[in-house]
Length: 265
Image 1: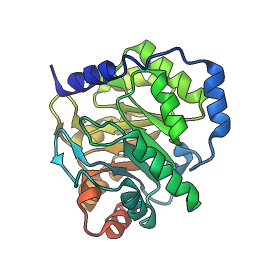
Image 2: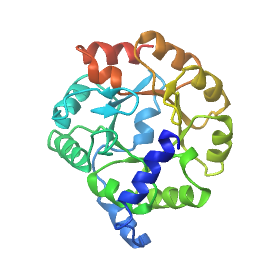
Image 3: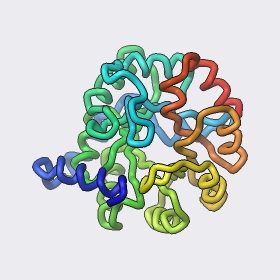
């Protein structure tokens, strides 16, 4: 079993007792309650610079331990906000990435208290609309849809639930056939993961191949494997509107300088 299949199987197993019918009315009520951060999509749709989605990530299957397990998500979010990150990505998977839904709740509360309009992505392995409810309740403004890992009916269910809840959806792809599949669902945001989630090998050439094939009216994100200005420039030159960066920012001793460099790529 490849790593992505392993993670998805574990996620489905973990959610087995939480699965329940999700009513449209429940999702619509959540949309009415959305107040923090504004639109994830609009935050990335800038013409003046490369947008940066800064990720809070304690560990990963590829990198191992990235930060102390006791890392305070709010402290990390504060660094990112002060460095003018455009959006935040918050890992809520516990077993493989060391995150939690509490991280999302805590960061969103911090943003609300300090009146900082920075939208958050709930970064997790989504399989059922019940997770969309969790994301909306926690204050996320976007969910992740990993195209490779889901059947068409699952993608549709997640897309429809996110739309009713007032959330954007980031469709993540790694291959041309996944782009073709994603385009069937009228995506507004597509992320190209430079990391092969089967083997967790990273190659920026994946973005250079796929991003030029994405229609112009879709926001394009290059994800994974971006560590320095040269990597960001490669992403920008192939047409990326934004980059999603985790490990490099988590390990950086000068977050402000690195995000500024990414913005200017």
